[in-house]
Length: 335
Image 1 (spheres, rainbow, N blue to C red):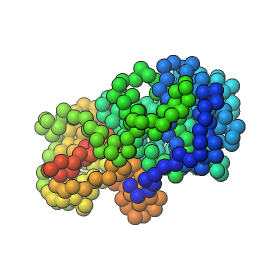
Image 2: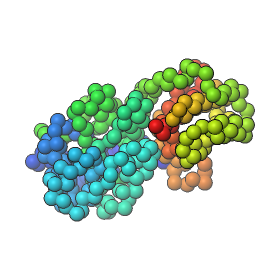
Image 3: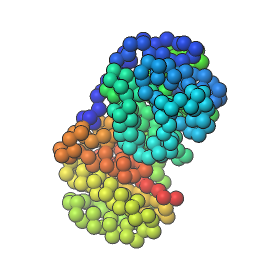
Image 4: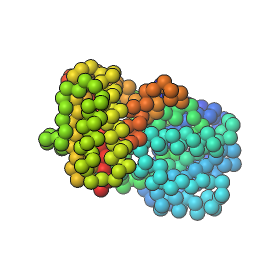
């Protein structure tokens, strides 16, 4: 993605002071640390001093965590009014590009010149393998997407989370923080390599007969009408159906205009869900960061927004490449 800077800073030095992570002379830029905590007492003993020392140094502070962690941290910082509280669900149960945009905006609005916004964030990974993958990918993507932004994330994770999630934590955070202090993470994986190796969960519906199939798409108009007509028969929230139609239309347009023919589309409409797979016979979409921001940065007049829009309009977007071509699977649920 062209608006991402493919490097990130770890400027300055760190030391452990009372189990707080302290930054000395760091240039503004993104830092991405992880704390896997056994109990709330351990979390607050590390994260609260880190927030307070940041405030003393001129950083801004924000908490976007679950209710238990948020309550304990607020008490530990003495309900300091300078510590902003953001409802976790509003960030992490939105779509991943929305969360990225929100954190960038918070940093732009609240970080003083030459300082960072410190965030204690507790990602909500959801309940399904597809949810997990979206937010596992997010933890890798932000290493690039936030690269030049004045953010310091202390991502906190309950040690009781499923092992696949904890394994992804170890692979997506350059530094780990424990009660002994911060340390470089030897398990950290280059974000692009991590994303390319991250498996796409199987979707059983793809092995069944679709409600709509077109394996020889040559224009965008016919599929758009066919999908719209089918979605009119679906008993679902009108705004969700309209968003899904727009996402399918964007991906079909991409396949026709930028892919290699033949292009195809298959759509399933089980109760409470929509799943659509759009494919072409080429080998494009090799950028693992595609769709997490507009392809041409802030200048939206240059286009390149299709996949970015799809990621905001659907619950899950999965891209697969094999010897038959490229496919994009979109899915949304309202159950």
